[in-house]
Every structure is written in C-alpha cells, then in structure tokens.
Length: 305
Image 1 (tube, rainbow, N blue to C red):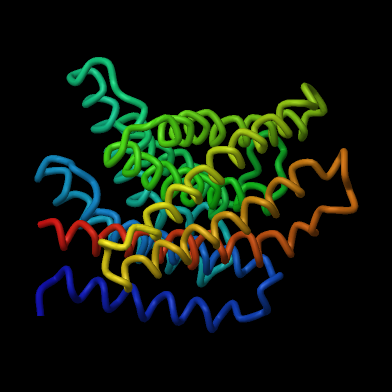
Image 2 (image 1 turned 45 degrees about the horizontal axis):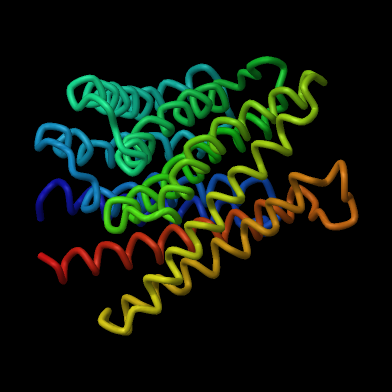
C-alpha cells in the first residue's frame, strides 16, 4: 500500500471519527467543522484532477492530505496556541499554492475570466487557512466571535474554492456570455461577501454585505444554470448528467437561501437562522454542489481522455 493511499484511508477514518465526536445535530457549530474537513480531505483531493498545474505543484498538493489530517486532529482538543501548531502545515501548503498561482499570473500576462477563476480557487483557500489558524489558536481577529472566525474559514474553503473552480471550468469549456457572467460575479462576490461581513461587524458601509451577497448569488445561480445546461446534453452518459443535475439544483437551492439571509435586514421574515443556514445551505454546497459537481466533471474529463 503506497503512502498516498494510506493517507486517504486515514483521512476517511479521521472524518468519520470527527463526525462521531461532533454528532450534536446539523444545527450545532460542530457541523461546520464536519463540512469544512470534508472539503479539505476529499473535495480538494478530488479537484487535483481538474487543475492544470505543473508536476511539482501536483506533488505538493498530494502532500496536502497529510497537512489536512493534522489539521483535523487539532479539532480533537479545545483551541489553544499549542493546538494551532497542527494547523501550520496546512497554512504553509495553501500559501505556497497561492504563491504559485500568483506567479503564474505574472508569466501568463493578461488572464481570461475563466483562467482567473481557476487561479482564484488556488488563492482563496490560503485566506481560509489563516482564519483556521486563528480559530484553533482561540484568537479573535478584529474582535470577531469565534463562530464568525470559523465561518470565515469555511467560506474561503467552499465558496472560495469549489465555486470559482467550477465556474472557471465552464468558462474554459464554453466561453460564452453566461460563463463570463458567472466567472465575473464569483470573482467579485467571494471577497465582497467577506468585506461586507466585516463592514457590518464595524457598523459601517451597511450596503456592502447585501451587494456582496447579491453578486455572489448571481454568480452562483449562473453556475447552477450552467451545470443544469451541461446535464441536459444527451451526449453525456446518464450518470454524469445526474451528478451535474443534482449539483446544479443543490447550488440553486443553497443560493436562494443565501440571498434571503443576506437581505435579512430588509426582509427579515424570509431569512433562516444562522444555525439553519449552515445546516441546510452548507450541506447543500458541500455534498450536493461540491461533491456531485466535482465528480461529474472528473468523470467527463476521464471520458474525453
């Protein structure tokens, strides 16, 4: 048994252990950790088949499973600066990945929107990794509640990873107006949502969060339509079409919930509570959109190869 396979098996066992240790219900804060670790251990590993990166970068990404396992182990204890040491390898790998992506920007020159989206999927998780270090160290940057610190880390590992990656894949496959709109809205929406939450926290620029959420929802709904359009193509095998269809419907549902939550100050009666949001919106994004979407794209690429 090679090292990579052993690490994958260990990752599966660790995720199952964390799921059992944190089985306090979907609306518990621990469910955020379960969703986050699923992305780190499985979705990011699955995405390597879709990222066109140099071989040396691929080797480093394969080592990220070890770092993800260490990070997962850190959740077995209460957060302390000592516990946070287990998260540093993950931060270093994500920073190196972001550096590689930004260096490619300089060598490639002007990027298309689709290329920028795929590169963003390699950059945004580094921001999430920094917030993970803060969470495991029990730090509260800018006076944010520890729950918000954890949700910010999750945001940049989900909306900041799977969403721009799949938007970029659509742009590369079919660079039409719809794909360009999806890429542009996602690229702007992911950082604007984070900036908007920060502005709301400090009580300034109240319109920033609704703007960011609206842009991200627009981009996400467009990606959902692109997934469903791809699922409608009869030349694709039925299994691929079903995965893409589930992915598109899950994302569409999740983002309607996000829009209602983002406009809660204007239309409070439509918004779910925050625990309901990470239980429903988060689960739909991770298992419905992320897992099914990446599997669908990997299967399509394997057929083309």
